[in-house]
Length: 318
Image (cartoon, rainbow, N blue to C red):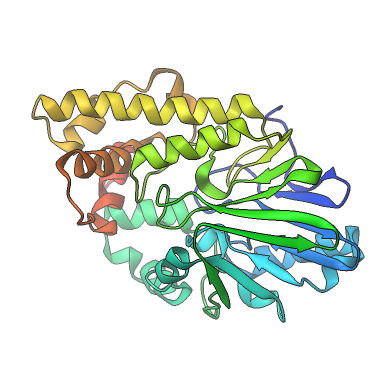
């Protein structure tokens, strides 16, 4: 698929749509709409209310059934895929059990507080502003799922079959694919970052690689990633190859006794350096190191953000 796809609403098949963000960097996420008969399903909301409101208006202009969304699926817990939930009034909101629990840990209110305090964080604060400064987290009501599931869940939109497949923990603890077999479409959430660097907040990486292989084995032509342009199987393969590359490179350095941040700086990204946000290698190596060591504890998110800020060249004078 071409990387020149314009942001906005794109028809995919008969009654399936993709909403593409401008670019695929921090917070700029995609979403989807599925309609049939008299029913509609939204796949993810966006990072703040203004963005979500704009998306919903464009969907309603193009598709009358979008005026009342019956079902909303949150593919995972990151705020850029669920902070706009409050604007989808009356919908049943479905997520995996693991995602619903994870959503409580970094609410819109917490993000608003972090952004308000970012000026006190020095280089880290500047990196926060770089990543999230274009979004407004003030006054966003925390709107969690109303229904959860584990494993798989079969749903219908009109006469269309929609299958939810939990593939996490991977990117986050409860990642879900939304497969519409009749339309040959799959919405992947952040299992796929296209032309943007994947970030392993949770792992294990083997689960993420299996999730990519599952998509590769699907009978589907149109693949909507969580970030970046609509893709096909070639895009999925590239993400899988990146994950395997980082795993293998991190393992070499772990076995040599190199520290995680030192290893992140040492790994030559080669072809992957052209993807946006390459500094996410710091989080990916940290997650892999914890996996290699058999550790269940998670590194503090602010520490991880500081490591990425360092790799991205942010310092007190930047």
